[in-house]
Structures are given as structure tokens and as C-alpha cells.
Image 1 (cartoon, one colour):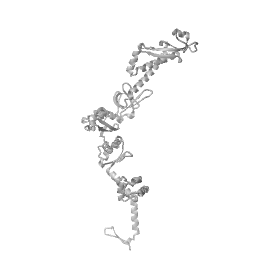
Image 2 (cartoon, rainbow, N blue to C red):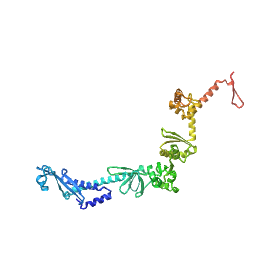
Image 3 (cartoon, rainbow, N blue to C red):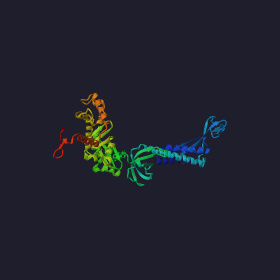
Image 4 (spheres, one colour):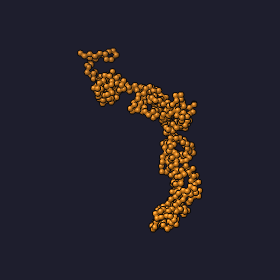
Length: 454
């Protein structure tokens, strides 16, 4: 049962498995205690101690010195005790060394199971400790097998999993392929730590640039944000701490070498490198490149922007299936609504017309409201009195009346163009019926020339 050179074995296992030496020793001590209890019962008082000098684990059984023995496994008579220790007294606890070779096969098997379990626990803890501080790092591994779409990656010391949701669409791997991924999470589970990898997270893109661009690693160039649609397109915003260094140029590299290395790792994913700007509107304009921006209307409260672009740049700004504006929105953290100039002008005209149609609002009043940011009857209906009285010529009562009129105008049913045309035709027809036939004279061209009533 006991290993003569157990000290050497402990040191070798500790080195190979990366497990602390003391943990292994405690596991062996616990195994021998378990083996002794399996052989002699659970009641006995057992203590196992590793002797560093001899490289041996010694097992001792302790019994209490009593005058009359009632529990033979726990007690020893004073007479027997004094044979072991002449100076012992009643109530003392005496320990005798046990021969581990007498524990038997079943006890040895029990000890083996304890050792195996303790080693697994220690190995699990060692793996968790070594990887928990590496979250966010890029790691290399080898594809080992596939489990319902998930890729199991061999990292050497342990295995990791690349779930389906963290895999880039249309990327395929075979067993034995080398794979590079970011450590997304390290989970402590009963069956062992689970290391979760990702190739789709924006941080994977950021870490790839840190690897390829020395200026980023040194802190001269900062990555302010990144957004991805994995396998298709990505945007990354960069800024420089040194005015002499162009952050975009640093990331692109000589003849595009640096960014191409990243693109190659991401299997052809298109990457837009965007200069970050402290002015949010300017940053949004940069993020929507290569589209030209005519104007930006900012809604600070809702973190939203309406971006107006020339008609010919509308499709460029929106991108294929809305991809460009969607990535720009993720990168900047603002909700972006892109419209063409013609759409914007039509909307403004409709809004202005709705203002003019409100009772008490003339052209000059509509112009004043427009200048203060009230572009439609709907916006005027939701206005505050305190804000309206800031406009010249509007007092408190006038402001209340304008809001009331605007709300009523919104409640009134709007007539469609078909209904309006029908009313015009009906009115024209009615006016002709009211005039006698002989009172209408037509000119040479047959058009209405004159109307007279006798």
C-alpha cells in the first residue's frame, strides 16, 4: 500500500499536473485514513501524517486510557497503556502506529478512489486558477473533436469549447486543424472547469489588432470601440495619444500589411478603420464613411440622431441590408436614422404645412416655431408652455391656446387626396346646376368665358 519513494512520486505528479505539493500530500493522508476506516470501522480515531524525512505516510490509531474498557476500538486499559507509555494516566490519549499493509485489498481500492478523486479536484482547481485570470486573451489550440456543432479544442493542459453561437458563419474546421480564439469565459463546474472560446466577439478583433499593431500594444494608439457582424464586416474606432502618429495609418500598416493579417485571420472579413472624434456628431459622420453627410440632427435625451445625406449617397450610408448604418450605430452607441435630402425636405414641408393649418398660426408664427425646433403640429402639441413663451410674441395664454389647437388639429380626421378631389368635383358640379343653361355663354374654344345672371 505504501510507496517507498512516495516523496519522489509526489514531486513528479505535482510538476506534471501543475498541482500544489501540499494538496497531493493531504490527498494521500486522506486516502490512508479512509482505508483504515474501511478496514477497522468508522468509529476509530485515525491520524495520517507525511514524514518528509523518510518520504513515508505514517498512520496512527489513538485510544483513550480508561480503567474499564467499554469501547475496544476507542479505549485502552491503564495496564496496556503503561506498557506503551509508563507515565500515562487515565484520560490520556495514546497513539500506536498501524501497519498499512494489513488494510487489505478493499481498503486499498477505497484509498485509490479517494486519491483519484482528490487528484481530479486538485487538477480542476489548478486549471481554473491558471485560466480565470486569462479571460480576454487570445489562445491557440488544436481542434480535437466535435460535439453537436460545438468544437472541442485541445489547449495542452486542458480542453476548451468553442460553442456554435461563438463560431463565425461559413467557417469550417477539421480534426487536427490549428485554431485561434479569445477566452470568453471560464466556468467552474463539478465535472471540471469549462473554458469557453469565441471568434465572433468584438474583443477578438481588438486583441488581434493589439497583436499586430505595436502602437496599440504600447498605448500610443487607443481602440475606442469595435463592432462586428462576424464573417462579413466590422468597424473599429481608433485615436492617437501622439499628434505625430496617424492612428488609422498605424493600424493599416505599410501597404496594408497589418490590417491584412487581421483580415486573413478573420477569413476575409471586411474591416473599416475609423478615426475617433470627441465630437459625437463628427464621430457618427466618420462611422458612416464613405457616405457624405449633409446635416445631423441630434436628440440628446434619447441618444438618437437623424442623419441627412445627399440622395446619391443614401444607399452607401445605409449599406447592404442596412449593414453600414447598423454597425455605425453599434460602434457609436447612438440610434441612427438615415434619410435622403429629398425625404428630409418633404418631411419638413409637410410639417411646416401642418403648422400653418393650426388655428392661430400664420406664416410668420410658423417660421418662428420652426426656428425654435417645432417642425410639425405633432411637436407643437407635445410642447411645454414654459418653452413656448420663450418665443417672441407668445405669452402664457397664447402658448396654452396654441398647444390646445395643435392637439385638436391632430384629433381631426385628415382627408385623403381622393376625398379632397371628390369634394372639388362635387362643388363644381353643384355650381353648374345652380346656374340657368341660357346664362352660360361659351367662347370659340368652348371654355367658360363669362357668367351673368338676369
